[in-house]
Image (tube, rainbow, N blue to C red):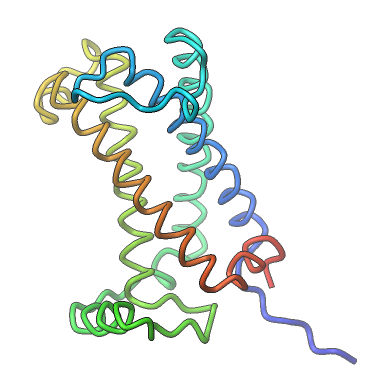
Length: 198
């Protein structure tokens, strides 16, 4: 009888990962269209990679995906806390181990032998995405309902500050996604784990 392969990612995690991925793509593409309405940083995003067709359409897509990401993200965080996965997978953090893993990554020698355990670079990257996503949601709340969140607005440097925070937090998320896709291309079995779980 064939031994059952170890479960790498439970079903709830895989579903939430793909829902988040879809929501983030919609948010990014519609957000770029919204950004283009003012292009406040002095450049525009190519229209071909934006979503919504016009400002009103982009805002509708953005709000729809925003609710999906917020609800799915809260469920993801809640299940990670409730199951102990957050503590088990992402902690403890070690500066020495991180430096060692970064050096190994720069040499192309970062180990991925055991998919059940994240190396220190992965831990920090995934924790960064969680914090960055919270920052995106908070700055997005200020952009959406600035008057209703005066304290949050002031903490983020006013409306214009929140707009900058939102844009650069999105840019940081886009950079993470790019690195994430490169890593998946280098270690393709990780994609199979996120599809099959085992």
